[in-house]
Amino acid sequence: MFTGIVEEIGKIVGLSREGGGIRLHVSSPKSIKELEVNDSIAVNGACQTVISKKGDSFEVEAVEETLKKTTFSSLKIGERVNLELPMKLNERLGGHMVLGHIDCVGKIMRIDKRESSWMFSIQFPKQFSKYTIPIGSIAIDGVSLTIAGLKENNIQLSIIPHTMNNTIFKFRKVKDNVNIEFDIIGKYIERIMDSNLNQKVRLSEHKLREAGY
Image (cartoon, rainbow, N blue to C red; front, side, top):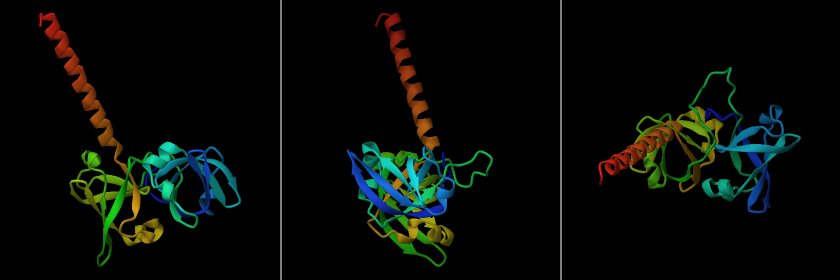
């Protein structure tokens, strides 16, 4: 589990195909000090398992399902990525609870420079609109953010200078794709409500049969 607070900007220094997946070799001089093989790390918000480490870099292997739901298939050598180590239970939760399970890919539609911030407008598939609320939490490329504006399947996010300087937002351009993880609370509520509804339907059918219908 993660908090959406990026700890380091890493760099893709190697990339190779492994069957239907890809193996990423990531330079991370800061994070590598705490990483061991089998540890988890969030790369642009996607939870990955460290399969090897050497010097100041580590390797992860992204399989078909990850490539389908994230921007990993378009990563290139030399590209920068957001990195976050898993949260520790004895520390403060700085952002919000992020699992590192990417829901979909969104696209940056506008970047407006303001006096002391940047407003990013991001579009995502319409079926995920139900997981967004005004002033709700969302993770973009692993960065915990607050939804500043919302209209159907478009969100606006206000990026402060610190976030801009310490994440790959400073490299992002209009039309770039980003990884999106919606707040887990909404997804659990939806599942519970669906389960309750199904139980009522089954119960109703049973009662009808008992009544001779």
